Image 1 (cartoon, rainbow, N blue to C red):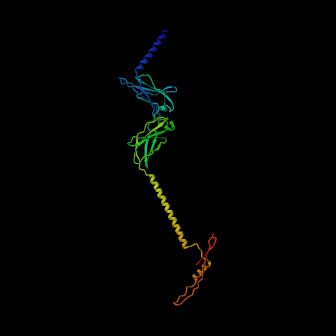
Image 2: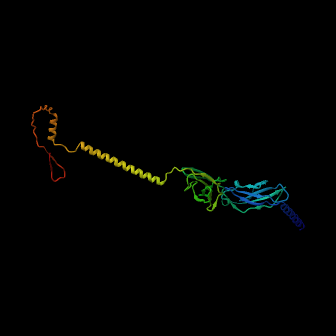
Image 3: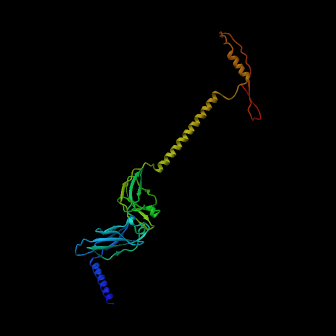
Length: 313
């Protein structure tokens, strides 16, 4: 019985010594979990003491089989757990202070899920202007594990743009990484700011304000296009009328020179004989020649006529 009492006293003294030693080493302060771009970092502040002791720190990660050390006997005030975790896992972290072989109590964090607590840094934004239009080219921030769309699926962008020097901002929500700004005026300065929308209600850090002077426009005004179309129509109409009139009068002239009416065969023979007959002898003064005169009658027969018309020449 006395031996048991002696053992209990010794054990109590050992526990008391350990407790005193732990109380002599202060714990880290302001312990916080930081997750940016799917990374996982534990940060803390050194203990507030009057003596500037060279504290060391050990940080551990709780896995399936308990805590595993990640940063041991380190003077840094941060410990990066990114390479030791998965994106969709849930983890608990802890850290303690060490001084001359003595340690403080552990300071544990709450259980955290990387994909739920992570913050996304600002996207990269470039502006290009051509023919009076301004295009926004957005590049997703690089992730420490995988990429943004693989983790969060369909993301979108919140775009704010405004005329430089004015406070009124226009908001656009787009899923495309290249967006043409609507209703911008040529030769005006515009500024753009972009945020990434993910997890339905979370936004990334805003991008830097990017400004660009819009280029001059080569587009023709709508009213001028209408006038040009009207003038073109009138020119084509006048050209068609002139061509029609030229063809018509050419046809009429051709018909005057080469009429459609055919002479009777006996008249053609008579004219042919007259053209082949020898030239008449010269007529002497005082000589009277008697030329026979014959009456010539030409009949013209027209189709679809009930009666034939008779002309006497």
